[in-house]
Structures are given as C-alpha cells and as structure tokens.
Amino acid sequence: MLVKNWMSKDVITADVTDSMQDAMGLLKQHNIKMLPVMKKGNLVGIVTDRDLKRASASDATTLEIHELLYLLSKIKVEEIMTKNPITVFDDFTIEEAAEILLKNKISGLPVIDSEKQLVGVITQTDIFRVLISLTGVGKKGVQFAFLLEDQSGSIKTAADIIRKHGGRMVSILTSYERAPQGYRNVYIRMTDIDRTALEKLKAELNQSAKLLYMVDHHQNKREIY
Image 1 (cartoon, helix red, strand yellow):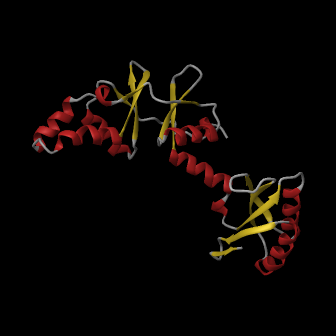
Image 2 (spheres, rainbow, N blue to C red):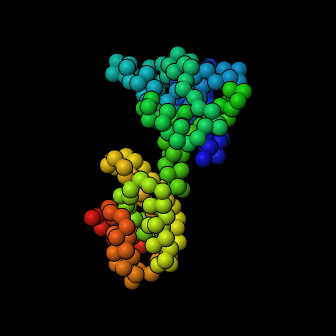
Image 3 (cartoon, helix red, strand yellow):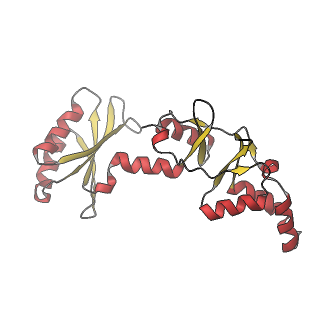
C-alpha cells in the first residue's frame, strides 16, 4: 500500500510571506494542523498549529489584545516555520511513512514526487484509515486472535477450520510482537458465520492453536482466554 494512494492530494499551503494570522486562519478554515510552506513553488518549510500557538503565547500575557493581533499580522510564517522539513516520497509504503512519523514523534509529513515537488500530505489520520481498511473492522463480523507456531501451514490450518464452518475471510494479520520465540500472533477476521456454530468452531480452533481472544462485533461480545 503506497503513500500516493492514501495521502491527501488537495494540499493547503502557506507562503513564506504569509503572516501568522493568515496561517492561523488557514488551519481553522480547513480544520487541519499542518501547513507546508512554499517559496516560489518549492517546499521550504512546515508550520503547525503548535508552532503558531507557541509563537503567539510568548507575548500573550504582556500585550493588549489589539497589540497581539497586530503582532500576529506582522510576524511572517518564514520566521517561525521549521526549515528543511522531514518528507516522504509518494512511492514509499504506508508502513515506511508510519515508521517515520513514530520515530520523529510528528503527526504528518509532506509528500514529494521523484522531482521533489510537493504532491500531498500524509497524516496520522490517513494511517488510521489504512489500519481500518486492512483489518476490515468496518465489516464487523468476528475476530479471532491466536498464538501459532511459526511454521509453514499453521495459518492455513486455522483458516481452513473457519472456512469449514462457512466463515468468509475478511483479513489475516500477523505479528511477532509480544510472542514467544518460535511463535507469532495471528488475527483473523471473518463474516457470514452461523452464530450457533461458534462454540464448536472455538473448540476446534483450540485443538490446533492457542486462542487468545474472540470479539464478535455484531453482538458486542468479547471473550479473553
């Protein structure tokens, strides 16, 4: 899954000559938290709502409101922006972008193409949309979590048991995080299962894997084992 397919393409930007007041207005108008800053068509910086609040708060206690508004209209974005911002290429994968966001503790990234031209913005909200899409949680159904041996065919065995009971697979995700050596955690979401067959299904699954939990989103039922 590539950044170019999930990023916001209609990018709201600020110019280096815009005032803090202009930038604040853009953030509020478009309900966003980050503005790429442009100079003659090139990306030269980034300014966030946090930058603007920090810059304006420093004098807020010593100025009258009309003086503060005047100050905000005079300070240029160029003076408070972060120069040479961290960016991501549009052909990076979503997980690569997520890793950069996490590592740098930031909420969004300008996206550039092979010519280093600004083509979009990828944010934490976009990453959340990808997570929802990958897991299939929007389709509700039932999610099973297993601890499976990390060997060929172990996931297929569990998946075949679910299919035998008429379940339709929505997503299969795996992770080695917090799993013992030689094992991995597996998360399978399914729909179209007869609820009267769930107990028998769980019993069969437990024979081939350690069942960690089951969440039935239709009935809001959660079982932790």
